[in-house]
Length: 215
Ligand SMILES: [Zn+2]
Image (tube, rainbow, N blue to C red):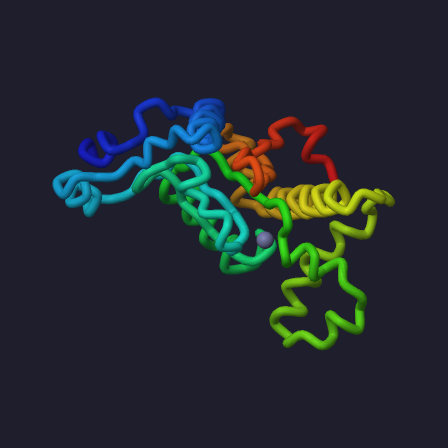
C-alpha cells in the first residue's frame, strides 16, 4: 500500500487541492505550456500496483475534448467517464461510485463543452428526434429536461453556452441525488462541481459555487 501511496499526486490532499491542480493544468494547456506528463518504463511498471487518481470527470465523448490533455494531467491522475452529452446514466454512475468508494478520489467534475452535438440534438424539433434510433433518443431525453427553462437568448453562441451549462447543472443535480455521492459529500471526501470547456480558447470554466450549480 505504501508504494501505491507514493504514486499519489503529492500536491493533492483534498477537493480544494484537486480543483487547483485542474486549474493549474488547464492554464498550462491553454497558454501552450503543457508539461505533457509521460512516464518512463520503470514508472509505468510501478503503476501495475494500482491507481490513485485524485479526481473523476464525467465528460462528453466529443473528439475535441480529450480530458487529460485539456487538464495537462498524466497517467493515473484522472478517472474519466466519457459519454455523449456528459449524461449521467446507470453504468456511468456505477463507474463514478467505484472511483469514490474504492479509489478515494477527492473531486467529481461534470464537464460540458462548447458546440456539444448532444445538447444541440436535444434542442432539435421532436420529429427529428423521433427519427433517431431508440438508444440515441433515450440519451437525448436525459438532456431535454435541462433545456426546458432555457431563457430566450438571441445570440446563438451565447444560447448554446447557456444550454450546455444548464445540462451540466442538471447532471450534477442528478448525481447529487445518488446515495453514495450524497454520503461522500457529507463526510467531506468529495466535492461535486461543474465545468465548461471552450474549444476556441482551450480554457475550462469550473463552476464551483452553489449559486453557479443551481438548476
Ligand atoms: Zn459534446
